[in-house]
Each structure stands twice: as C-alpha cells, then as structure tokens.
Image 1 (tube, rainbow, N blue to C red):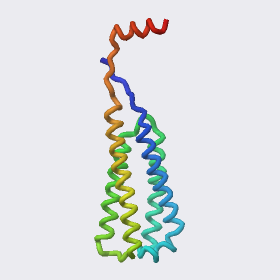
Image 2 (image 1 turned 45 degrees about the horizontal axis):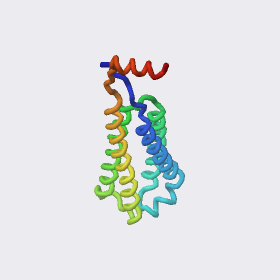
Image 3 (image 1 turned 180 degrees about the vertical axis):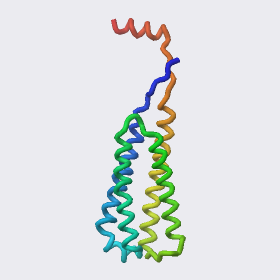
Image 4 (image 1 turned 60 degrees about the horizontal axis):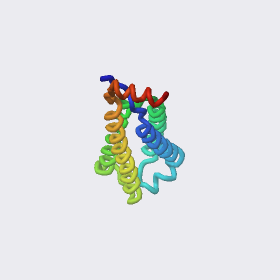
Length: 153
C-alpha cells in the first residue's frame, strides 16, 4: 500500500479567502467610518477603530494561509478557534453591561457575530474534509497496471 497526498485544499483555501475579504472589508470600514458609526451604534469610536486595526492584519494572515499548498490545516484550525472566540467575545460585549449600544448597535454586533460564526462552521467543515482526504491509501494492483499499459498501446 502506498500513501499519497490527494488534497489540494481548494475549498478550504476559498473559505479562507472569503473570510479574508469580509474581514478586510469590515476592518477598512471600521477604520474609515468609526467616527460616524459610533453614535449610530452606541459603541465607542475607539472600540470600532481598534477593531478595524485588528481586522486588517487578521485579513492579511488569512490570505497568507490561503496561498499555501497543500491545505494549511493547522493554521486553518487556529482560524476556526479565533473566529469562535470572536463570536463569544461579541456576545460577551453585549451582555457585559459596560456598553450601552443602540438597537442598531446590538443588531450590528449580533449580525457580524453570526457571519463570523458561519465562517467558523464552514471553515471547520472544510478542515475536516481536507483532513479526511489529505492522506488516502492507494494500491496499484498488477492487473490494473497491465490493463492500463495495454489500453495505451
């Protein structure tokens, strides 16, 4: 039996790139519009701005992971954990009582947490699939090889 790598990780890399695009877009929006968004959302300008600052390198790291081949399973697992922690932190932010977001602010925080939770789920599914297919046992039977040789002549 011969074990060979069969996984190119394309679905996982696509998920990481989509996560990078949305994280980067959110980061840029928060950096550029923290001032106008703060009163609408009832969230501190500094929180919005620093969240944007955090999202830019996160987005860049996702692009870096996605460009690696084969599928970056360890890095992708770390992204799943980071996304799950982001969701927990977002909910804790609302339940903690330190902030008084507007209804729109609550909706904004919950909506972005839902999107991040969806990414965490889809990336975890992609990691599991990539893990399952990354090492597939293959056997080359003599009669299969002989048959293949006859069909090419």
